[in-house]
Image (cartoon, rainbow over all chains, first blue to last red):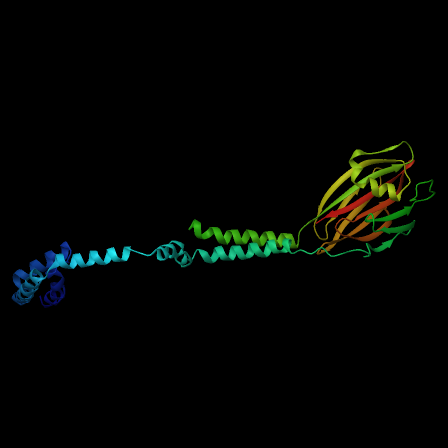
Length: 170
Length: 147
């Protein structure tokens, strides 16, 4: 019984505020029938509530709520009357967008895209005039002629395969 | 979830794209041209190199035998079969740095390498490898790369 009393007394506050579930409610109400201590505790809570309720209700009745609402509405109307500059500023304000985390990967994507396109935009074409085209050349069986022309940009490697009959570069 | 996953996926694709551009392929065009003094005229498909051929050689006739476009990866070797059995050309992309592609070209005849060369191809530069005979004519290989 003692155990039951201590566990019920912990729930008594919740029961008083009507925050207990059905199971707890049955348990408490069953216990209250046989326990005078808990009944007394509950009655004290009810008395305290009644003691506080009276002055609060009296104060609320005295308070002029319509006047408070009028004041709030006036404030709202004043706030709505913005200057053209304030209106424009609030219209152009995009700072809220930057608070979203989605902009981080979007910005990273943009940076990568810029890096890639920059390679093509700022790609310099070096001048290869006079640069050697033939790095090395070897022919164990034939004579070879190498001719490099800049205009037109052509390099000729000619193999003299056996007897040539007019089949040679001019 | 989908909205959050999209930007990283896009970044990943772009990174892959940039990586493929950095270590990418080199499009190499190899044209086998038969040049001879038999007949007169130039193949309509060789108009873009007509000026080069005309200024360098004294042949009267040019005919396109083969037009190959190879997408070469670094250290990749491609064999191009010649018009005579036992003759072929072996092309290897040795390296690429900025706008210069280095190609190793070997001309092989009856299992014997008759030409072994490495050439650097710049934008707009054509390398003509000529000399192998084909009857009355000679074969000229026009090699160029696109970056």
